[in-house]
Length: 113
Length: 111
Image 1: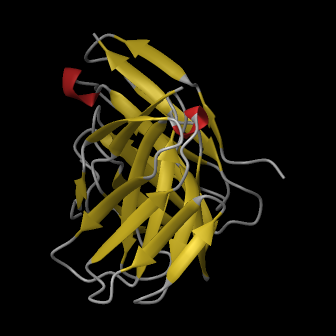
Image 2: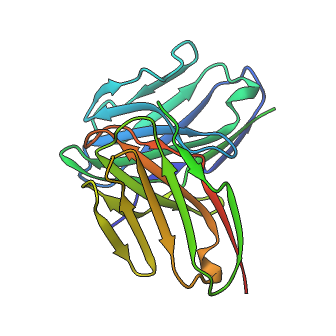
């Protein structure tokens, strides 16, 4: 069974440019999470989806960040415009809605110059 | 979200030694999990604990869910070089909810 797929794995952009990350969860997993991991820190939740509904986006900086999961399967996280402080690893995870462990993708490492 | 207090921050040990790390929180969690993260990869689940007082093993790894539901520990016995990585604890309030992570324990094992 394939794990959580994320792309790109690495992205380098200049500040003020837009950037998008893509995630395909494990087949059948209804719940999808986007986490932000700064260097030397544990991951922190940005947004949680149950199917196509964002049920927890309280930590998402909505002035520049947006996310969508239109068909309840794969998801896109966008930053526009990017700032230097956005340099981090963006992790996607998925799980069954009814419970079960969260499985993480390899992450996208973003560098903003 | 709340970050958990994880200690030690780093450990440098010799192959064959046992390792112990722990995690505390000011809030109660109903699930405690331990993950390992290798460089350039996402966290991989090692052990999940669902009941206060529960002691669970996975090979050379043993973890316990504290009786107060505010702490957990992870032990690794007879460490080997491939145990090198960063170990994160995570607490979860309810099933499906976001994980609250510690800052990680960096483990280095010398042959």
